[in-house]
Image (tube, rainbow, N blue to C red; front, side, top):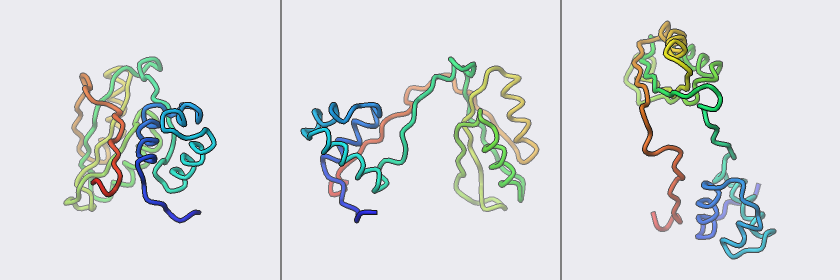
Length: 160
């Protein structure tokens, strides 16, 4: 692994562009930032190696896959049950995010919040039932989202 080079203005611009279009060609990227395609490819590889780019993903339309609804499930885990909830989240494909929140509880975890996709109220209820055996749940159904999957604003470190 190479020594980490500080993020510069070109690196920031590459991150901005790739966040909005991860499928852009190196030729297209190079044109936008003033580099040749091989130089653009080398800069992207460098950003990957340095950990600035962790992965590339497709944003899939849940409604096209029969999962038109989403919700947040908050969980206050029973003592000693956080691991069970983590296992459920790993094994349940409809749970697309799981986050441990600031601690104060007996298990070192005050709460967990999960984002789930579901097809119907009975489907949501079945997901909640899996979790409820291990803690107290509260569910909020998402009606609409005004900001979703926003690209992260990136700055050169000296400008922070």
